[in-house]
Length: 123
Image (cartoon, rainbow, N blue to C red; front, top):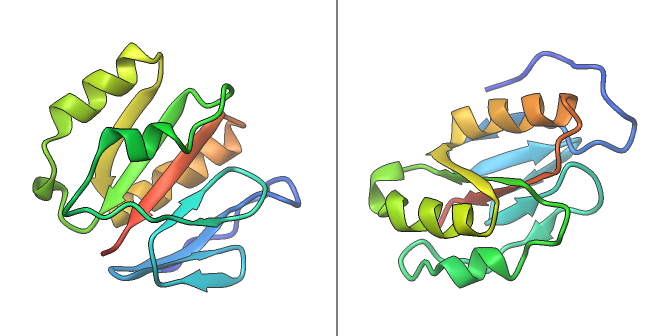
């Protein structure tokens, strides 16, 4: 799906489009698991959905992050409650959502200049 153009900071990691197996950030397509910050470089993510551990998310956070998005094709494959509760204990809000919703939410948070990370887990 293609998104309409939004006016954001020049160095913002806006999501331009997505499929069930990829996300296009600015003008680069990623067809593997990635962590997308509002700015800076997109990072390859080694988190595996089948062996998901909250520690894998926590080790990628810095002090400024107050919200994370975890994007999956099948949101039913994870037990969301322990993940959200553990992140809430750290003062971090979290949402686990499908790829399309995550892309829209990412761009909205980007326009609000929020401190967040988006984890896109395709595999």
